[in-house]
Structure formats: structure tokens, C-alpha cells
Image (cartoon, rainbow, N blue to C red; front, top):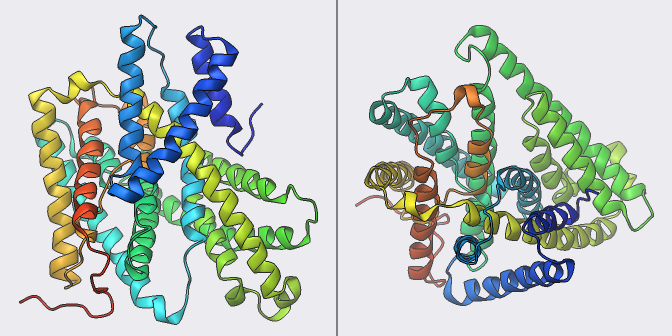
Length: 422
């Protein structure tokens, strides 16, 4: 029943529509229309620089209130959103990694993006946790579990919006958002551990991280070998299925398996750096380039499909009434201000460059939503209004849209000539 080429999303949405007692032919028409609309949104996004994700979320909200108007029973899609989010995360990280080139000339860029991701995450999560703790009257440790998801830059939203940016700016955003996803998921999984502040928990977490790095290198070489040796045409989705299997098993045993996805994509796109010595005979550069081109195409198509249904379903879960609650607006606005100020602090005062529009490219989305759905019942805060999550996701996406609308593609690349603060 479950396939990795978008079949899961199609079958899941079909089941959801069947629960609303809609005929099979209407279901096919609706699913096809959603994909066509999403494609049109992509074209609109390129022309207007309005993120297609915002249009998808708005579509989901519209579907929710339209079905409610015509008397259909509202469906619980939380589990489907979580499943689509997990698969979408794999595909988006892999898609991003397949575009990243590792070389000595890129070391400064990689360093800056890593420091930006980790600095922004640490300061943002600490400040938001303190805010939530004081605002909601909860313990700081409990508040941290809610602060972490909102401190992660969404690669699912920001990466598709970077196509018109200069190459160096685009690579900075891809590295930063991908690393932000990984760092955030690592810390979130750590906070789910019992006695997270104990020496035993720290040692266990460090051990799991070491295991993940070792498995990443081993799995990447093994998958690369399989890609060059399998002759049937079905090998690409076999690779995706293996990656999904490794990711899910890793998550179940608390190993940061998203790192494996990123490393595999980097190894595949930079095979000349890794296929040396005994491994050099595995494949010619021409053959690897043909594999890469096809894999990029398949990955992009699949992530597009999954992202489409994920954000429409997320929009369907949004309750607009919650966004009008004064407490939600105040707390959500305070969180957004923290995120913006922390990003400004690093990009302008520490990196010492006038990085526009990077300052505005800080959307929260897929990973934030996915981690919120993963908070266990025993660690959840009844005092937290989920409308705050909706507010932060929508507000940061609108801020990103504003930055992209005012960005001129002719701007010089600030990474090549950083500007000192005057």
C-alpha cells in the first residue's frame, strides 16, 4: 500500500476524502487539481516572489472552511500530517544536499552557515524558553521542549524560495537551513530523554551522535556502490526506500539519522572527493553525472508532491479563530521579534556583513510542525495555545516574503566582500 514515490501522500489523502463520503472519481479530480494548482502556485511564486507554501497553506484553510460551510464533518489529519512531514523532510534535505558543492573555496561559507545555524538556534531557543516559562508559568525545562521547534529555520519553505538568489547566497541558505533542521532535531530528541540534564544522558547522546556519523559514512559508500552496480531502472526509488528505512529506524532508537541523509547527498554530489584510491573504479565522472541529473529530477518531483499535500493539510488544521485571540497575538509577536533580533545580531554584528535578504529568510514550517506533533502527552503543556504555533509559522513566512519582494537580484554578493559596520 505504501510507496515512496508519493503513493503514501496520494493514498492518505484519498482515505481522508473517502471518510468524507466522496466518490472515487471526484477524489481523482480533486487530487489532480491540487497538484495542478500547486504547480501554478510555483509559477506565481517565481513571478511575484510570494512563497508557494503560503499559497498552499491558504488553500488548506480555504478547504477547511468551505467543507465546514457545506456541512462536511471536519477530519482529524494530524497523523497524516506527521507522516507526510517525516517523508517530506527526508526528500527536502536530500534535494538540498544534491545541490551543495564541497570544496576548499567553500569552507568559509560552510563555517559561516554552520555558526549562523547553531548561534541562532541556541540564543533563540534559550530566549523563547525563558519567555514561555515566565508567560505560561511553566518550568524552564518544559518550556525548552516547546521553544526548540520554533527556533528551527524551515528548509522546506526557504530552499524553494532561493532560486532567484545569487549562488553564494543560495548555498548559504541551503547549508544554514539544513543544519538548523539537524541541530534542532538532535536537541529535541535529547530533551525527550529521561533526566536530560544527567551525565548519563549527555554521554548517551554523544555516543548516539558518534554512531550516526559512523553510519552516515558507511551507509553513503554502500548506497553509492549500489547505485553504480544496480542495472534495473527501479534503483532510485529503492535508494529512497532504504534512506526512509534508515531514517525511521534511527529515529526509533534515538540516533540523529537525518545526518545520514545529508551526508549521502553530499557524497553523491561530490563523489570525486570520496571515490579515490580503492573506490575510484566504482564509477566514471560521466556516469556519476548522469545518475545525479536523474536523481535530482526525481527528488525534486517527489519533494514537490509531498510538500504540496503536507502544507495544504497543515492549512486545513489551522483554526483562524485562535489567531484572533489577543494572548496568541502578543505571545506569537514576542517570539517573532526574538527570532528577528537574534538573526540580526549574528548576521549584522557578528558576521559583520550587510546580508540582505538573508535577514528576513527565517521561516518556521515543516520541522517545527513535525516536532510539535511529536511532543508526548506526558510532556505537553496544557497552558500552551497551539494558535501561537500557527501565528509564528505564518508571520515568519510573511516576513520572508517581504524580504524577497524587496530584494534586487543585481545586488553584490556580500559573502565575497563583507562590509564592516560603520
